[in-house]
Amino acid sequence: MSYIDQKYINLCTSRLERFKKVRTDLWNFRCPICGDSHKRKDKTRGYIYKKKNSYFFKCHNCGAGHTFNNFLKSIDGMLHKEYSLEKFKNNQTGGNSPIPDKVPFQFEAPKFNTPKNKELSQLKKFSELKDHPAFSYIEHRKIPEKHWDKLYLAENFYEWSRTMFPEKFQNINIDYPRLVIPFFDKSGKMFAYQGRAFGNEQPRYITLKLEDNKEKIYGLERIDFEDHVYVVEGPLDSLFLDNCLAVAGADLDLINSEPSTTTAIYDNEPRNRHTIDRMFKSVDKGYNVVVWPSDLDHKDINDMVLSGYHDIMEFIKTRTFSGLNAYLEINKWKRK
Image (cartoon, rainbow, N blue to C red; front, side):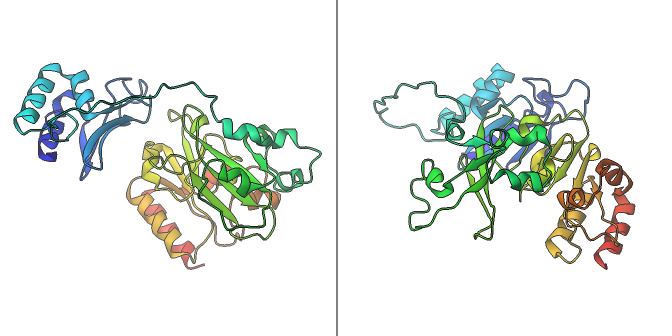
């Protein structure tokens, strides 16, 4: 019963530093396993959350993850005994499920170590494709050379995708090459990817998740949350800035970075109601935002680079606002 779990989650208050309830079925605190940031005592990257009918612990700093039952056992053995006893009295196991009359025999298949990101081994990195016609795409976009090995070419995108998603793209007869942008987690494992068309093929972008429980946040494998974090919308835009993530449609809150040291750079779309709402929401939560000047028509960071801008960081610094100043600048910008 979830009320028992919630009771014991709230009893963790004195045991978990900076413990707070974010919203229904979501609590946040400093991770007791890794200690979270040793430089920033206000960092809180440990979470307890509900998935289906069970509660889980996850740290977005060290990557530790447990059921709430095992997490409670690790931080307070005595409290865990009380929790287990109360669960038992209510005919429940530590995992929120009723105790079965009989425990069926279960055979667990042996697990074999497989190479990380073996799916990408079927593709060529753009750093290996300088003589290929597709190379002109990233050359034209002026993608920095240090990131060429993060981008891949799928000569037959749908065929390659079906090796991971056999049920998808069954009725497509014509295949096209696409730029493949892998999304890696902090350990470097691919959990999603985006296929971008080189021409006018539709849809222009196809993004697929290999792990449904992870948000589409690009750049996690190279980000330093101890430093100032920049957040843009498109993965390619993020390659022009240091310590930069791309949310690719995900909510800014899911990044779990400190708002005061995070700057959000939304696309230059003053007529887009959704973009404006997201900017105001970011300011409400304490984030810094970049507000584009009214006389600038470039739609994003890559567009600025293509037009000849060289010192993008200087531009960002001069156009970064927070609090009341951000509200005023956004209101001026949206009337552009």
